[in-house]
Length: 316
Image (cartoon, rainbow, N blue to C red):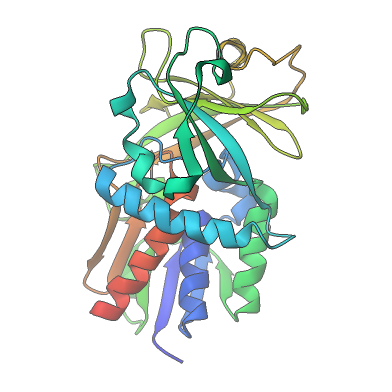
């Protein structure tokens, strides 16, 4: 058995790191005050797409590495991961900076007939989709079968580990504002609507904002359990109570990009706070490896960032 590792945080980032390190014979413990179903990861639409994340060059590398892992997971019946066709709308072709994050044969330019009216530029791509509750449970169970340990408690300070011989991996997301006083972190308010599924509706994302603002989004993600409609990306908004006016706007925007949406029957409305940061932080600081600040791409970069954490541990 290699070194002892203590991971703080049990969202998709912490679990992905925990699995990769456990598979490589590290003695891994995840410490968390919230199990996966109560984390921000559980609220995500969880479609593979590198949204609101920098630096772009590394985001592409980590997204592509994650794509490969998700493709493997999609072949496992109970993983909650499947492959789906996603249409991404852009205002200009040069806005599609994420093209290099996909295998070449998995993306193509969409024809005019394949796009909604008033949106002339778009791409069709084959991407992973995770049904969050199934996928997070799958990750947690896999971690445990690899002899990973989970301890439920809140970490108030990294000083609690001063007498420990373990390496620490910080996957606390927005919690790093308080835990390590990272003032570069900020919340990105994300409201989504879960609606009754509609069989004819396609998976589609607009990679730009609406309504003369930089925080109103539109995306439609059909899942087995529901239809996810989003969303918002309101920086520095801490309130996690669903806003009925935002719900109405979300449905209207989604109908614009996916005209096949009909009489949306809302099942529930959810708000999560994405961990925004000018750049993802994956770096080593003494005996601590940081892995947070993934913005709106936590699932998309999860495996790539986990592999980078492993490299940082082994290169030291």
